[in-house]
Length: 382
Image (cartoon, rainbow, N blue to C red; front, side, top):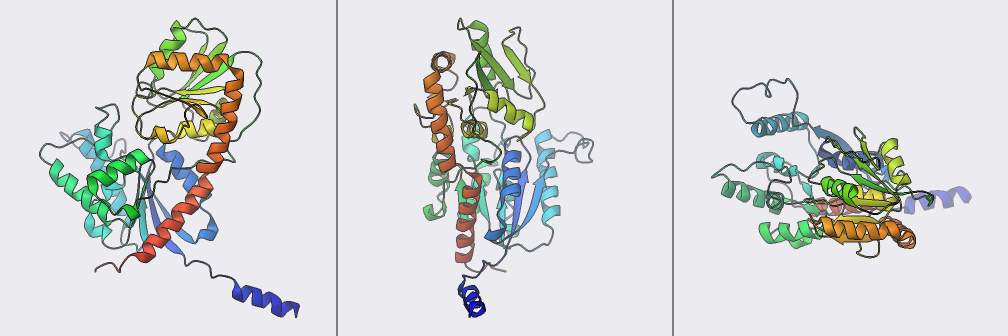
């Protein structure tokens, strides 16, 4: 009787989803590498995905393409990316292709017609160009832009699903390229809440302010440095994590180079900080701000691009105008001097991260939408 009941329970259990063969295509720019690692490490086995991870490098030092004379660097990098992509894809058959941001290099429609595809993006190319050179984006070729816009429109409209990270990116995608709104799902990248943890901080001694930004000028690191070297406020230390050279004579400023995404050394800096500041001039989103919130830090962040979706202004941190040293100084100094506000906002930030930015929840939701979208697709033409 017990055995038959057990067998009956198994028979009545819902069937597992059929394995979905997915080619995840990523590049390793700062930020995107973090998202790739989060997806690779936290893709749940039970969601029924058979993944192939394709990682594209845009540059091979000393490579044959890189040594070609007369060609501009941006063309060499595009050629390198295309060759790596199509070499990795080969003649393999997939149920769906899933490029991360910068997935528009999949503009070969003949390859796209072979299987459904979904696209993730942090911005449209036009939004990147609107940052007036502050954001590195593919170069524009005179006379080719109308054709490129036409091809992007076809690719966006042909996607089974689109995953912009923010409302800012979604609005431009819809207004400029006209995909079916039902296929557009605003889903931010999540972070690993088991690695980025909240813990009580010592309130003894100076208030520790943290900045993390590879591109020091674009991320507004110079504004923080200027504040540090001119403020009359006492009782703080500033920690700058960047890949760029930084020159300072202040004993209160500490500079760190070579820290890798998700590394123990980087996490330790977050854990010992009391405030996170990113006065960025140009950004599509901010993974570093999510990491700060997960560790219980109030965040001072410029409202630019899609960053307005991250901070609940006055609750989990403060949004300031980009490029404004005065707003940065006033907001940052108020937080340094107000311990209760830091603690209150830090706790609220952690709760908000758990609700909206848990990588496991967001991956599951993405897979659910992707599977439904692929199942709803008509058969691909031969």
